[in-house]
Amino acid sequence: MYTDFLSVAMVVVIGLMAGTATGLAIGYLAGWQRPHWPDMTRRGKTKNAVLVIACSAIYIAGLTWRFLLN
Image (tube, rainbow, N blue to C red; front, side):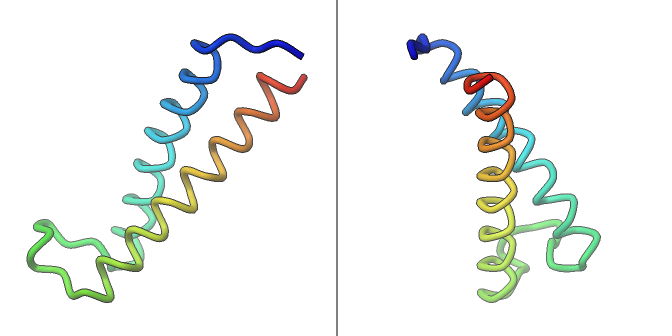
């Protein structure tokens, strides 16, 4: 199966943006996100970063399955 570069790049970029927005929103609602990055504890920063990475990976996987594999 052939997939062009722009399709792959678009799926990755949209997945990263959606995952970042979702991860930060969940972190804010859970009370992990603070208005300023230096105000957060090391544990809060780590939890927020892992949440953003996980949400981005889920979105990228879903978009890949939907648009590139079907």
